[in-house]
Length: 529
Ligand code: TNX
Image (cartoon, rainbow, N blue to C red; front, side, top):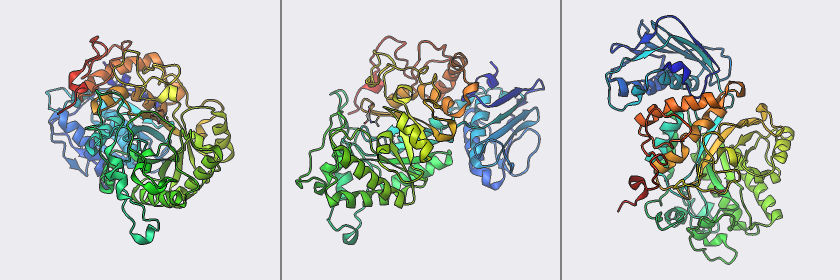
């Protein structure tokens, strides 16, 4: 098969040449100017694994090399790139390291799937002569990991980053707090910054110990934990090497039971709530009449902003079902102001647009009426992240027989095709209003990375193409064929993808359910002692 035909996401322009192909030789080198060296290193790591070649990084270029170059003016924005492959070598150009990183992902997919093996194999590393010019449709192409309902270690988060970036996904939203747990360390600011003496250390000491328990087969044990501020910096530093921006979320004013359990002063009666393991939603709230509420939010968002490298912080705002509507609006407006005063751009779930938001605040649409979101986008210039549940919710079951996953979203269950066959520009929203697309993985039923992978892949691949490739380039039948070819790459990476029955997979998944007809997958379903 010709690898220029199986690229995912599909590039804007691909012109296969009828000139001789390029063969990567053991003597090949990777040439890059200093600012491109970190990206060149990423490429070298990828290719060294499967080929076993040395692939040293150099500054000059000679025939047979892969070269990374900067070009000043560039069509298609900061993430655009061109890739030119001839018999003499492969040449990537872009205006930024991000553009080069995207080009590297395309180049990687042009090599035979064996390049994804961690052990070197004796392949013929031939890629077709081709001219590619490519740029993303949307700047924000994200996944969300709910680390509150089930904790994911720093290592697991990094593994998720490794996988997502091969499809040019560039945003990782971490849902850090919820009713069942609080996952991010907040330092005690000392007496001066803490007039009410709030026990911030309890947030993780108490709040970090929870998780959802939907069944006895999935106990809390093994799914608790939290990130120190250093851990969070470490995740972001790793993400940055792969062109990924991390967006942290503190969910307010609902989904806060873990905070109410850790900090007694956040309760009107001054008594800490018990921790909870239920998967019910919409039953907890901050109290807008307590000064401690605002003191708390100011301290938490201040520290969060200080440890966040990227421009965004997310303040939640969803499903505050037991919060009086006027209180909700008043709190959310105040919290958004506090967040904006940190210098960051505020993001929230679409309910929060009921309040007046600081200019430029981002609305993440997930559910309900899109019309007010479109209005805000047009009138107030609020960029929108599109996460409509029925097209992006990665926590939903694939079929009624799926051993994990929820199934509350109407129209489900959902496979790769429902997450492919939609256009983010809908209901009057136009591309210029849309920051991008994000697929949330809520983790009530997910207890480790293999299970997360199974819910994510291949649906996250659909979302990656929706976010990257222009609507006119997309075609479900063609995408299904390319997914089939992708199977071998995912299998070589050890990914537990869902073997969608309507796709002709080129290799078997590490977790082939439901093809095997059994719902038991011992290596992923049992609890380690
Ligand atoms: C709704 S989507 C939620 C989450 C749940 C999810 C389960 C959203 C903004 N809130 O709290 O985990 O449903 O699918």
